[in-house]
Amino acid sequence: MALDVDSVVVRYGDTTAVDGASFALDGGRVLALLGPNGAGKTSLLRVCEGFRRPDAGRVTTLGLDPYAARDRLMPRVGIMPQGGAVHPMARAGELLRLFASYAADPVDPAYLARTLELGDDVLRRQCRRLSGGELQRLALALAIVGRPELVFLDEPTAGMDVEARHTTWAVIGQLRSAGVSVLLTTHLLDEAERLADDVVIVDRGRVVAAGTPAELTAAAGIDRLTIHADPGLPVGDIAGTITGTIAGTIAGCVVTEAAETPGRYTVDSPQGTVDAAAAAAVLAWFARQGAHVTGVHSQRRTLEDVFLALTSRRAGR
Ligand SMILES: Nc1ncnc2c1ncn2[C@@H]1O[C@H](COP(=O)(O)OP(=O)(O)OP(=O)(O)O)[C@@H](O)[C@H]1O
Image (cartoon, helix red, strand yellow):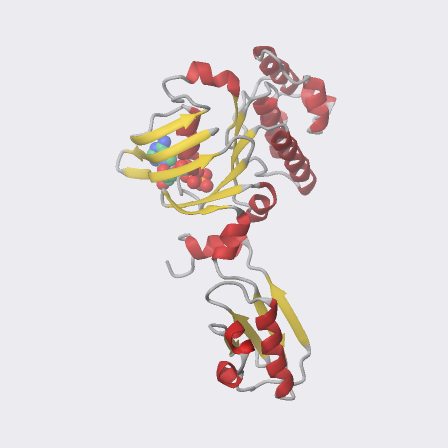
C-alpha cells in the first residue's frame, strides 16, 4: 500500500479542516481527491507529504510516518504543490537540472522538458516570467524528475489550456503504467473520471464517498431513460398495467412526465440502473398506448452528478 490515511484530523485554531478522514491508495494506482473549496484536500495532502503532523489519527506513506521520517521519504516522493510554488527568480531550466541533480537516478531533464512541451525559450526564462500553464508544467516536471514511487499533485491542471491538460493526462497515464502511485486533487470531475482508478470525495473535512468512478456512479442509481412522446399519457399507472414476468423488471421504476416539458417522460430506478428489460417493457407500454414516440435517450449519471448530490455545493444547503 502506498498510502494509508486513518482517522486523520487537522485543525487550524478553531477550524477543523480535516475531520476524521480515512482512505488508502494502493501501489500503482491513481487516486483523485475531490471536494469543494475548503473541503480539506490540501490539508490532507500536507499531512500525507509529512509537512504537518495530524492533530489526531495516523498517516503511513510508503510504509513510513511521513512527519517523523521526512528525510527518508523525500527522495521517494514527488510533490507538485498548488499553484506551482517555485522560486520566482530562478530560471526554469536551471531548476529542472538542479532537481535532477538531487536524484540518484533522474529522468533526463531534456527528455522530460520535451515530453511536457517546455521549449528552450521557456527553460531559459525566470519562473516569474512563465505563464500559469508553463509554471504548472514545470512544477510537474520538478515533481517527477527524480523517478518517485509516489506523486502528490495538487490541482495539476489548474490554469492549463486544453492541449497542456491532455499532455499532463498522458504523463499521469505513463506514471501509472510505470507503477508509480499518484494522489491528485482536482476540481475537474471529467479529469477524475478519466484518470482515476479510485475517487475519494471529501466535504467539510469528512470522506463522504469512496470507490472507483464506476462504483460511485452505479451506486447513485443511474442510467436514466428519457422518452419523448405525446403529452399526457397516463404513466402513473404503468406498473399496474404491466403483468406477467415482465412486471418484475420494472418494479420500482418511476415514470414521470416533466411538468415544464410536456411529452418528455423520464424513467428512473431508485434501486439501481434502468436495465434493458425494464426499458423494453416501458417502451412496449408506450406502443400499446398507440403513442407516437419521437425520441429515446439513455443517460449515464456522471461523477459530477454524484459529487453535486453529496457535497455542500448542492443548491439550498
Ligand atoms: N494555514 C491555515 N490556517 C488557517 N486555516 C486554514 C489554513 N489552511 C487551510 N485552512 C482552512 O482549512 C479549511 C480546509 O482548507 P484546505 O486548503 O485544506 O481545503 P481544500 O479542499 O484544499 O480547498 P481548495 O479546493 O480551495 O484548495 C478551509 O476552511 C481553510 O480556510
